[in-house]
Image 1 (cartoon, helix red, strand yellow):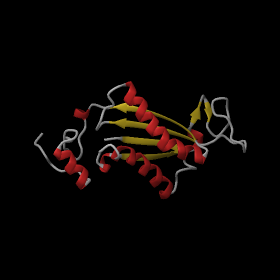
Image 2 (tube, one colour):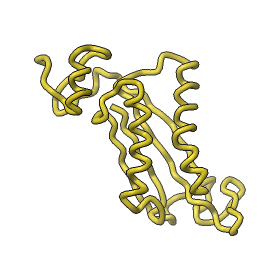
Image 3 (tube, one colour):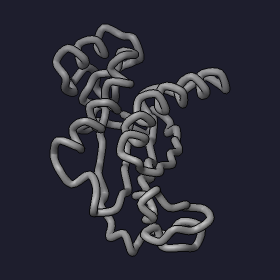
Image 4 (spheres, one colour):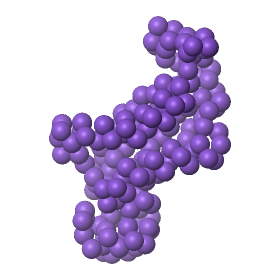
Amino acid sequence: MPLWRLYHPDTILNTPEEKSIIASKITSMYTAVGLPAFYVVVLFWPLPATNIYIGGHPSIVSSPSHPPTAAGAAPPFVRYVASNIARKLPGPEAHQRFMKRVNDTLGTVMLEKGWDWEIHFDETERELWRISGLKAPPTGSEEERLWREENKAIPWEKL
């Protein structure tokens, strides 16, 4: 299950429409390669801007590591932390392709909004993952296809 956490100032991403756009874009990256949509979880974590520091400076203040916008204010900063569990990327080339997909998908939104952003991914062992107590079916299996079609976890084996 891809689990995405977006830490952001509470002055941005506070409408359902904005959140839906980003969550839909993230979800589409995974459904495009065959994952069930319900695997993808996106959590928005608004924080007071005074609780976000970049390079030792409050993010609301311009600094060498967080230069000002044309208007003179520091741009909002969004920190993405994502865990990939359902699939592991097999190596450096796959990592590069995936990061390009992420940049192509989310970078345009961040650029349009004038927001700074950073992201990193963790990969968790699939054996340490359950959905509603169920082990996920094997990749590419008939059971996984059924999960994708039903968009929910369905019992398929006894643990």
